[in-house]
Length: 398
Image 1: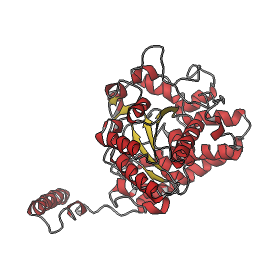
Image 2 (image 1 turned 90 degrees about the vertical axis):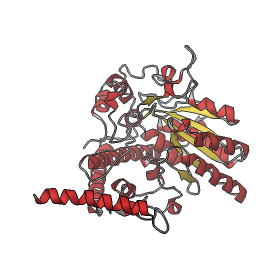
Image 3 (image 1 turned 180 degrees about the vertical axis):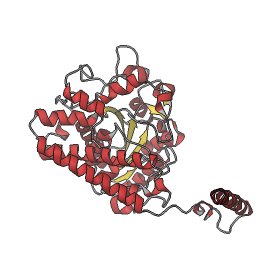
Image 4 (image 1 turned 120 degrees about the vertical axis):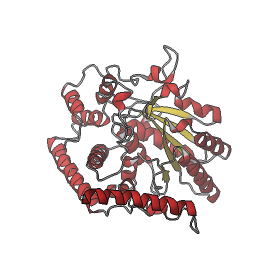
Protein backbone atom coordinates (compact mmCIF):
# COMPACT_ATOMS: atom_id res chain seq x y z
CA UNK A 1 0.00 0.00 0.00
CA UNK A 2 1.45 3.35 -1.01
CA UNK A 3 1.77 6.30 1.33
CA UNK A 4 0.55 8.85 -1.20
CA UNK A 5 -2.69 8.82 -3.14
CA UNK A 6 -2.56 8.08 -6.86
CA UNK A 7 -3.71 11.60 -7.61
CA UNK A 8 -0.97 13.02 -5.39
CA UNK A 9 1.72 10.95 -7.11
CA UNK A 10 0.48 12.08 -10.52
CA UNK A 11 0.47 15.66 -9.35
CA UNK A 12 4.00 15.32 -7.94
CA UNK A 13 5.29 14.13 -11.29
CA UNK A 14 3.76 17.20 -12.92
CA UNK A 15 4.75 19.76 -10.28
CA UNK A 16 3.83 23.26 -11.24
CA UNK A 17 0.57 22.19 -12.86
CA UNK A 18 -2.68 24.06 -12.52
CA UNK A 19 -3.43 23.42 -8.83
CA UNK A 20 -2.33 26.14 -6.46
CA UNK A 21 -0.47 28.20 -9.05
CA UNK A 22 -1.05 31.42 -7.15
CA UNK A 23 0.11 29.79 -3.94
CA UNK A 24 -1.23 32.20 -1.36
CA UNK A 25 -4.97 31.56 -1.06
CA UNK A 26 -6.71 28.24 -0.47
CA UNK A 27 -9.07 27.31 -3.30
CA UNK A 28 -12.73 27.78 -2.52
CA UNK A 29 -12.15 30.17 0.38
CA UNK A 30 -14.53 32.87 -0.79
CA UNK A 31 -17.32 30.44 -1.67
CA UNK A 32 -16.98 28.48 1.55
CA UNK A 33 -16.93 31.43 3.94
CA UNK A 34 -19.38 33.87 2.40
CA UNK A 35 -16.72 36.59 2.31
CA UNK A 36 -17.38 39.43 -0.09
CA UNK A 37 -15.92 39.25 -3.56
CA UNK A 38 -12.36 40.54 -3.62
CA UNK A 39 -11.96 40.21 0.14
CA UNK A 40 -10.56 36.74 0.74
CA UNK A 41 -9.69 36.10 4.40
CA UNK A 42 -6.01 36.33 5.27
CA UNK A 43 -4.32 32.93 5.18
CA UNK A 44 -1.00 32.19 6.89
CA UNK A 45 1.09 30.09 4.51
CA UNK A 46 4.79 29.24 4.63
CA UNK A 47 4.87 26.49 1.98
CA UNK A 48 3.00 26.81 -1.31
CA UNK A 49 1.37 23.72 -2.86
CA UNK A 50 4.48 23.47 -5.05
CA UNK A 51 6.65 23.24 -1.94
CA UNK A 52 8.16 26.71 -2.25
CA UNK A 53 9.04 28.49 0.98
CA UNK A 54 7.38 31.89 1.33
CA UNK A 55 8.28 34.53 3.90
CA UNK A 56 6.00 35.71 6.66
CA UNK A 57 7.23 38.50 8.89
CA UNK A 58 5.04 37.52 11.83
CA UNK A 59 5.43 33.74 11.94
CA UNK A 60 8.80 32.96 10.33
CA UNK A 61 10.56 33.23 13.67
CA UNK A 62 8.65 30.25 15.05
CA UNK A 63 10.22 27.92 12.48
CA UNK A 64 13.42 29.85 11.77
CA UNK A 65 15.65 27.28 13.48
CA UNK A 66 14.04 24.18 12.00
CA UNK A 67 16.62 21.71 10.68
CA UNK A 68 16.57 19.34 7.72
CA UNK A 69 16.31 16.45 10.15
CA UNK A 70 13.24 18.02 11.79
CA UNK A 71 11.64 18.60 8.38
CA UNK A 72 12.18 14.95 7.52
CA UNK A 73 10.66 14.11 10.91
CA UNK A 74 7.50 16.07 10.07
CA UNK A 75 7.28 14.27 6.74
CA UNK A 76 7.74 10.90 8.44
CA UNK A 77 5.01 11.77 10.95
CA UNK A 78 2.55 12.56 8.19
CA UNK A 79 3.37 9.51 6.09
CA UNK A 80 3.11 7.06 8.99
CA UNK A 81 -0.08 8.66 10.26
CA UNK A 82 -1.64 8.34 6.82
CA UNK A 83 -0.51 4.72 6.58
CA UNK A 84 -2.05 3.90 9.94
CA UNK A 85 -5.25 5.67 8.94
CA UNK A 86 -5.46 3.74 5.67
CA UNK A 87 -4.96 0.45 7.49
CA UNK A 88 -7.68 1.29 10.00
CA UNK A 89 -10.08 2.10 7.15
CA UNK A 90 -9.28 -1.23 5.48
CA UNK A 91 -9.77 -3.10 8.76
CA UNK A 92 -13.21 -1.55 9.16
CA UNK A 93 -14.15 -2.60 5.64
CA UNK A 94 -13.05 -6.14 6.55
CA UNK A 95 -15.34 -6.20 9.57
CA UNK A 96 -12.61 -5.86 12.21
CA UNK A 97 -13.77 -2.41 13.38
CA UNK A 98 -17.29 -1.12 13.81
CA UNK A 99 -16.50 2.36 12.50
CA UNK A 100 -13.56 4.56 11.59
CA UNK A 101 -13.15 8.32 11.19
CA UNK A 102 -10.40 9.02 8.66
CA UNK A 103 -8.07 12.00 8.81
CA UNK A 104 -7.06 11.76 5.13
CA UNK A 105 -5.99 15.21 3.97
CA UNK A 106 -5.70 16.69 7.46
CA UNK A 107 -2.23 15.33 8.32
CA UNK A 108 -0.45 18.70 8.16
CA UNK A 109 -2.94 20.39 10.50
CA UNK A 110 -2.59 17.62 13.07
CA UNK A 111 1.14 16.97 12.88
CA UNK A 112 2.06 20.66 12.71
CA UNK A 113 -0.07 21.58 15.71
CA UNK A 114 0.77 18.40 17.61
CA UNK A 115 4.52 18.93 17.30
CA UNK A 116 4.09 22.49 18.56
CA UNK A 117 2.95 21.27 21.98
CA UNK A 118 5.19 20.63 24.96
CA UNK A 119 5.14 17.50 27.07
CA UNK A 120 3.42 19.33 29.95
CA UNK A 121 0.66 20.74 27.73
CA UNK A 122 -2.70 18.94 27.80
CA UNK A 123 -4.66 18.01 24.68
CA UNK A 124 -8.41 17.40 24.34
CA UNK A 125 -9.17 15.70 21.00
CA UNK A 126 -12.32 14.76 19.15
CA UNK A 127 -12.37 11.29 17.54
CA UNK A 128 -10.26 12.10 14.44
CA UNK A 129 -6.99 13.35 15.96
CA UNK A 130 -4.92 10.29 15.09
CA UNK A 131 -1.98 12.46 14.04
CA UNK A 132 -2.04 14.44 17.27
CA UNK A 133 -2.20 11.18 19.23
CA UNK A 134 0.91 10.07 17.34
CA UNK A 135 2.71 13.27 18.32
CA UNK A 136 1.70 12.79 21.96
CA UNK A 137 3.21 9.30 22.02
CA UNK A 138 -0.01 7.27 22.06
CA UNK A 139 0.55 3.90 20.36
CA UNK A 140 -1.64 3.79 17.22
CA UNK A 141 -3.00 0.37 18.13
CA UNK A 142 -4.44 1.85 21.34
CA UNK A 143 -6.72 4.08 19.26
CA UNK A 144 -8.52 1.11 17.75
CA UNK A 145 -9.98 -0.66 20.79
CA UNK A 146 -12.86 1.78 21.09
CA UNK A 147 -13.71 1.42 17.39
CA UNK A 148 -13.70 -2.36 17.83
CA UNK A 149 -15.92 -2.06 20.90
CA UNK A 150 -13.55 -3.72 23.36
CA UNK A 151 -12.81 -0.68 25.56
CA UNK A 152 -13.75 2.94 26.13
CA UNK A 153 -10.46 4.44 25.03
CA UNK A 154 -7.45 2.22 25.44
CA UNK A 155 -4.92 4.53 27.05
CA UNK A 156 -4.33 6.44 30.26
CA UNK A 157 -4.90 10.15 29.46
CA UNK A 158 -2.52 11.27 32.18
CA UNK A 159 0.39 9.26 30.82
CA UNK A 160 0.58 11.40 27.67
CA UNK A 161 -1.52 14.42 28.65
CA UNK A 162 -3.83 13.35 25.83
CA UNK A 163 -7.47 12.95 26.77
CA UNK A 164 -9.59 10.05 25.56
CA UNK A 165 -11.40 10.55 22.26
CA UNK A 166 -14.65 12.49 22.60
CA UNK A 167 -17.61 11.39 20.51
CA UNK A 168 -20.09 14.03 21.72
CA UNK A 169 -19.61 16.88 19.27
CA UNK A 170 -18.00 19.96 20.82
CA UNK A 171 -18.11 18.97 24.48
CA UNK A 172 -14.32 18.68 24.74
CA UNK A 173 -14.05 22.45 24.21
CA UNK A 174 -15.68 22.95 27.61
CA UNK A 175 -13.52 20.24 29.19
CA UNK A 176 -10.40 21.95 27.83
CA UNK A 177 -11.53 25.36 29.07
CA UNK A 178 -12.19 24.06 32.58
CA UNK A 179 -8.85 22.30 32.67
CA UNK A 180 -7.11 25.46 31.43
CA UNK A 181 -8.78 27.53 34.13
CA UNK A 182 -7.38 25.06 36.65
CA UNK A 183 -3.92 25.33 35.11
CA UNK A 184 -4.07 29.11 35.52
CA UNK A 185 -5.15 28.83 39.16
CA UNK A 186 -2.28 26.43 39.80
CA UNK A 187 0.15 28.99 38.43
CA UNK A 188 1.62 26.58 35.86
CA UNK A 189 2.98 27.83 32.55
CA UNK A 190 1.62 24.92 30.53
CA UNK A 191 -1.16 25.34 27.98
CA UNK A 192 -4.20 23.40 26.79
CA UNK A 193 -5.32 22.61 23.24
CA UNK A 194 -8.89 21.77 22.26
CA UNK A 195 -9.45 20.22 18.83
CA UNK A 196 -12.77 20.34 17.01
CA UNK A 197 -14.15 20.66 13.49
CA UNK A 198 -16.11 23.29 11.62
CA UNK A 199 -19.34 21.43 12.38
CA UNK A 200 -18.64 21.46 16.10
CA UNK A 201 -18.16 25.23 15.97
CA UNK A 202 -21.94 25.48 15.57
CA UNK A 203 -22.52 23.72 18.88
CA UNK A 204 -23.48 25.65 21.98
CA UNK A 205 -20.75 23.96 24.01
CA UNK A 206 -18.10 25.60 21.84
CA UNK A 207 -19.68 29.04 22.24
CA UNK A 208 -19.83 28.55 26.01
CA UNK A 209 -16.18 27.49 26.03
CA UNK A 210 -15.27 30.65 24.12
CA UNK A 211 -17.14 32.77 26.65
CA UNK A 212 -15.62 31.19 29.76
CA UNK A 213 -12.09 31.10 28.33
CA UNK A 214 -12.22 34.77 27.38
CA UNK A 215 -13.71 35.97 30.68
CA UNK A 216 -11.27 33.92 32.76
CA UNK A 217 -8.30 34.47 30.42
CA UNK A 218 -7.75 30.73 30.23
CA UNK A 219 -4.50 29.45 28.64
CA UNK A 220 -6.24 27.45 25.92
CA UNK A 221 -5.80 27.18 22.16
CA UNK A 222 -8.94 26.29 20.22
CA UNK A 223 -7.70 24.46 17.14
CA UNK A 224 -10.46 24.10 14.57
CA UNK A 225 -9.82 21.88 11.57
CA UNK A 226 -12.14 23.39 9.01
CA UNK A 227 -12.37 20.54 6.52
CA UNK A 228 -15.36 22.33 4.97
CA UNK A 229 -17.90 19.56 5.45
CA UNK A 230 -19.78 18.79 8.66
CA UNK A 231 -20.72 15.32 7.42
CA UNK A 232 -22.82 16.42 4.40
CA UNK A 233 -23.31 20.03 5.48
CA UNK A 234 -20.98 22.60 3.85
CA UNK A 235 -19.64 25.48 5.92
CA UNK A 236 -21.71 27.98 3.94
CA UNK A 237 -24.77 26.44 5.60
CA UNK A 238 -23.28 27.04 9.06
CA UNK A 239 -21.74 30.50 9.01
CA UNK A 240 -21.80 33.76 7.09
CA UNK A 241 -18.33 34.98 8.08
CA UNK A 242 -14.93 33.26 8.03
CA UNK A 243 -14.79 30.93 10.99
CA UNK A 244 -11.69 32.44 12.62
CA UNK A 245 -13.42 35.83 12.83
CA UNK A 246 -15.85 34.45 15.38
CA UNK A 247 -13.17 34.80 18.05
CA UNK A 248 -13.33 38.61 17.87
CA UNK A 249 -16.90 38.57 19.13
CA UNK A 250 -15.75 36.79 22.27
CA UNK A 251 -12.78 39.06 22.86
CA UNK A 252 -9.74 37.07 21.77
CA UNK A 253 -7.75 36.74 18.53
CA UNK A 254 -8.39 34.30 15.73
CA UNK A 255 -6.15 33.37 12.82
CA UNK A 256 -6.65 31.32 9.68
CA UNK A 257 -3.76 29.09 8.63
CA UNK A 258 -3.30 26.93 5.55
CA UNK A 259 -4.20 23.56 7.05
CA UNK A 260 -2.33 21.69 4.31
CA UNK A 261 0.93 23.46 5.20
CA UNK A 262 2.64 21.66 8.08
CA UNK A 263 5.18 24.46 8.62
CA UNK A 264 2.49 27.13 8.88
CA UNK A 265 0.43 24.99 11.28
CA UNK A 266 3.53 24.43 13.41
CA UNK A 267 4.40 28.13 13.50
CA UNK A 268 0.89 29.45 14.19
CA UNK A 269 0.24 26.91 16.94
CA UNK A 270 3.57 27.75 18.59
CA UNK A 271 2.56 31.41 18.53
CA UNK A 272 -0.85 30.65 20.05
CA UNK A 273 0.65 28.42 22.76
CA UNK A 274 3.20 31.12 23.58
CA UNK A 275 0.35 33.61 24.09
CA UNK A 276 -1.40 31.16 26.41
CA UNK A 277 1.72 30.51 28.50
CA UNK A 278 2.39 34.23 28.79
CA UNK A 279 -1.01 34.81 30.35
CA UNK A 280 -2.52 36.43 27.24
CA UNK A 281 -5.53 34.12 27.14
CA UNK A 282 -7.18 32.00 24.47
CA UNK A 283 -6.68 31.92 20.71
CA UNK A 284 -8.77 30.42 17.92
CA UNK A 285 -6.75 28.80 15.14
CA UNK A 286 -8.72 27.86 12.04
CA UNK A 287 -6.78 25.34 9.95
CA UNK A 288 -8.34 25.66 6.52
CA UNK A 289 -8.05 22.19 5.01
CA UNK A 290 -10.15 19.55 3.29
CA UNK A 291 -11.51 16.15 4.24
CA UNK A 292 -10.43 14.06 1.25
CA UNK A 293 -12.27 10.97 2.42
CA UNK A 294 -15.61 10.23 3.98
CA UNK A 295 -16.74 11.71 7.30
CA UNK A 296 -16.62 8.17 8.68
CA UNK A 297 -16.78 4.75 7.07
CA UNK A 298 -20.58 4.89 7.36
CA UNK A 299 -20.67 7.96 5.11
CA UNK A 300 -20.78 8.22 1.29
CA UNK A 301 -19.39 11.63 0.27
CA UNK A 302 -20.24 11.07 -3.42
CA UNK A 303 -23.86 11.76 -2.51
CA UNK A 304 -23.20 15.40 -1.60
CA UNK A 305 -19.99 16.60 -3.27
CA UNK A 306 -18.35 16.19 -6.66
CA UNK A 307 -15.05 14.59 -7.64
CA UNK A 308 -13.82 17.87 -9.11
CA UNK A 309 -13.65 19.51 -5.70
CA UNK A 310 -11.84 16.55 -4.15
CA UNK A 311 -9.33 16.29 -7.00
CA UNK A 312 -8.51 20.00 -6.73
CA UNK A 313 -7.62 19.52 -3.08
CA UNK A 314 -5.70 16.30 -3.68
CA UNK A 315 -3.37 18.35 -5.86
CA UNK A 316 -2.60 20.40 -2.71
CA UNK A 317 -1.91 17.25 -0.69
CA UNK A 318 0.00 18.13 2.52
CA UNK A 319 2.43 15.22 2.20
CA UNK A 320 3.15 15.96 -1.44
CA UNK A 321 3.77 19.61 -0.57
CA UNK A 322 6.47 18.86 2.00
CA UNK A 323 8.05 16.19 -0.23
CA UNK A 324 8.46 18.74 -3.00
CA UNK A 325 10.13 21.10 -0.55
CA UNK A 326 12.48 18.40 0.76
CA UNK A 327 13.49 17.38 -2.74
CA UNK A 328 13.98 20.93 -3.97
CA UNK A 329 16.16 21.78 -0.96
CA UNK A 330 18.10 18.49 -1.22
CA UNK A 331 17.03 17.60 2.31
CA UNK A 332 15.97 14.05 1.39
CA UNK A 333 17.05 11.49 -1.19
CA UNK A 334 15.51 8.37 -2.71
CA UNK A 335 16.99 6.26 0.07
CA UNK A 336 15.07 8.21 2.72
CA UNK A 337 11.76 7.80 0.93
CA UNK A 338 12.38 4.11 0.28
CA UNK A 339 13.22 3.44 3.94
CA UNK A 340 10.11 5.31 5.00
CA UNK A 341 7.98 3.26 2.63
CA UNK A 342 9.35 0.10 4.24
CA UNK A 343 8.68 1.51 7.72
CA UNK A 344 5.12 2.43 6.79
CA UNK A 345 4.39 -1.09 5.54
CA UNK A 346 5.78 -2.51 8.78
CA UNK A 347 3.46 -0.22 10.73
CA UNK A 348 0.51 -1.42 8.67
CA UNK A 349 1.35 -5.06 9.46
CA UNK A 350 1.72 -4.30 13.16
CA UNK A 351 -1.65 -2.59 13.26
CA UNK A 352 -3.34 -5.48 11.43
CA UNK A 353 -1.87 -8.05 13.77
CA UNK A 354 -2.75 -6.03 16.87
CA UNK A 355 -6.38 -5.57 15.88
CA UNK A 356 -6.88 -9.19 14.90
CA UNK A 357 -5.43 -10.26 18.23
CA UNK A 358 -8.00 -8.18 20.12
CA UNK A 359 -10.94 -10.06 21.63
CA UNK A 360 -14.39 -9.81 20.15
CA UNK A 361 -16.46 -7.20 21.98
CA UNK A 362 -18.82 -8.29 24.75
CA UNK A 363 -22.21 -7.82 23.12
CA UNK A 364 -23.98 -7.42 26.45
CA UNK A 365 -21.58 -4.95 28.07
CA UNK A 366 -23.74 -2.07 26.85
CA UNK A 367 -26.40 -3.02 29.42
CA UNK A 368 -24.01 -2.91 32.37
CA UNK A 369 -23.60 0.15 34.62
CA UNK A 370 -26.56 2.00 33.11
CA UNK A 371 -28.14 2.17 36.59
CA UNK A 372 -26.33 1.49 39.84
CA UNK A 373 -29.03 -0.88 41.14
CA UNK A 374 -30.42 -2.24 37.89
CA UNK A 375 -33.64 -1.31 36.11
CA UNK A 376 -36.63 -3.27 34.85
CA UNK A 377 -36.58 -1.61 31.43
CA UNK A 378 -32.87 -2.38 30.95
CA UNK A 379 -33.53 -5.98 31.97
CA UNK A 380 -36.29 -6.17 29.37
CA UNK A 381 -34.08 -4.72 26.67
CA UNK A 382 -31.29 -7.14 27.56
CA UNK A 383 -33.67 -10.08 27.20
CA UNK A 384 -34.91 -8.81 23.85
CA UNK A 385 -31.36 -8.41 22.60
CA UNK A 386 -30.45 -11.91 23.82
CA UNK A 387 -33.39 -13.33 21.88
CA UNK A 388 -32.32 -11.41 18.80
CA UNK A 389 -28.78 -12.79 19.04
CA UNK A 390 -30.11 -16.31 19.57
CA UNK A 391 -32.10 -16.04 16.34
CA UNK A 392 -28.86 -16.01 14.36
CA UNK A 393 -27.73 -19.25 15.98
CA UNK A 394 -31.10 -20.82 15.20
CA UNK A 395 -30.79 -19.75 11.57
CA UNK A 396 -27.31 -21.23 11.26
CA UNK A 397 -28.57 -24.54 12.64
CA UNK A 398 -31.28 -24.88 10.00
